[in-house]
Length: 465
Image (cartoon, rainbow, N blue to C red):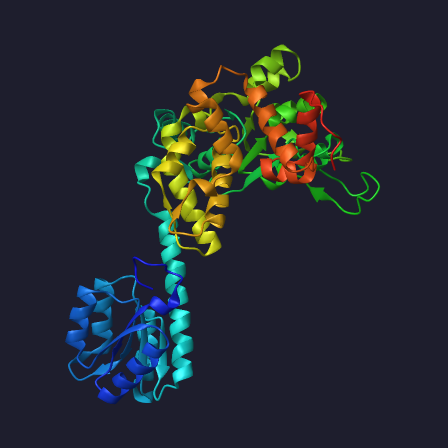
């Protein structure tokens, strides 16, 4: 399991064996070498320490009692020189308590002498598996400087740096925030960052998708109901607003909320109380509202499709999320992050992003924004066979669009956001054979929302299933 090779190829792992009994070292080096490991043996603790400092192994198997030094002290010095290295201790019965203490100081496991070979093999496999899990986690989290990320939000573009700055300014203020931007731009991540930076961070963050429920169910989900409020209401059920008391309520897809519910929500924001369905006593709440939409609420309010008074109540602070096509300088950073994340999820070696793949991605318009980029990279990592991602690992429609437009989104004539959204929905709907459930899953929206999109945008497709 050499650091420069496939971390999942267990037979390439480098092992060191340290014991002042020559016979023990020879027996283990021979047996483990036959298992396919790269093994070196040592009878001197100082010699082993020098070798660890020079060329760290994946795992060292060492006796806790050595003639030329204290085993625990030596182990700690080795771990300081090679933090990723795992340690398995061998000990006689007399030193068992000492071995137990050593595991608290960094040893992965300890084995009592005499050690059966099969027991040793099992312990080695477990230690190397643990090392791989740690390595994958570190690979996912590292590589991105703190200045280029805000929690889970990643970007180096001026527009994203502006988002980071606004989050820092607004998060501590107990005011409502409206996040506006296309689907897949990371609005919920920003909402969570606002909550995490607020005085309400210790309380609940409760998301609610206004487009995921039929109209008559929204009130029940938000406000809850009293026992006997309707047929089947066998007990009192608190709503999401009550659950979030003291915390933050995130109203996603607020533009899909029916006008009748908008009136009720406006009253909650103004009065800071509500009544459960079937109730007669107001329930007081203390919550912060963060709303998000991929629609232009100002235009909707002017067209009387959204309540103007609610719009102004929600947009105490308005944050516009930029689409990915307008911040393409963020694509390499995001793509690299998603490669590591996908490789970690699939238990695969982290492939490199070739210049050809990055160039192709930089010419693509990303109608599905960051969410689409993550799906593209996840697919590519799943299909990749070598040490780097190739053009053949990308979805064919990306290669088709970039070859047709020549220079990507910049070469296209200006289009309305809703037209781009419709084109994307149409393409995914067609690719799934007009399967609405699968289309909604790929787009990251509810089936109800998909149906509304198709209806409102006047799409003429087969009825679907």
